[in-house]
Image (cartoon, rainbow, N blue to C red):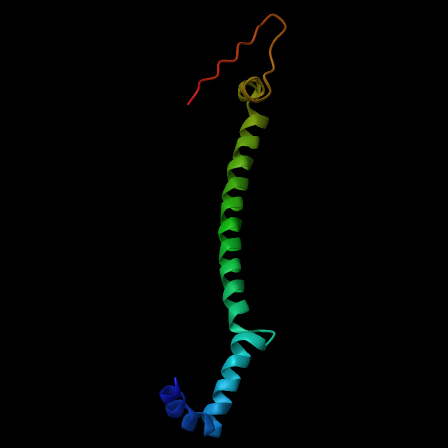
Length: 100
C-alpha cells in the first residue's frame, strides 16, 4: 500500500491533475446535472418513447375496431356476444373454459 501511495502522491501534488480530479468527481456525483442522473434520464426517455410507440399502435388498432363496430351491425352484435356475454331472449349461453 505504501508503494502505491508513494507513486500516486507526486501526481496529486500537481495542481492541474488535482483540479481535474475534483472537477471529475463534482461532475460525476455532486452536480445537479451529474452524469449518473443523465444516463438514468436517457434510459427512462428511451423506455417512454417505446411505450409511446406501443400506445400509438394500440390507439390505431382500437380506432379501426371502433369504426368497424360503428359501421357494421353484425360486428357490433358479435362483439357484444363475445365480450359482454349478451344474448337474445330465446337463447342460452354455455361458457366452455379450457385449462392450459
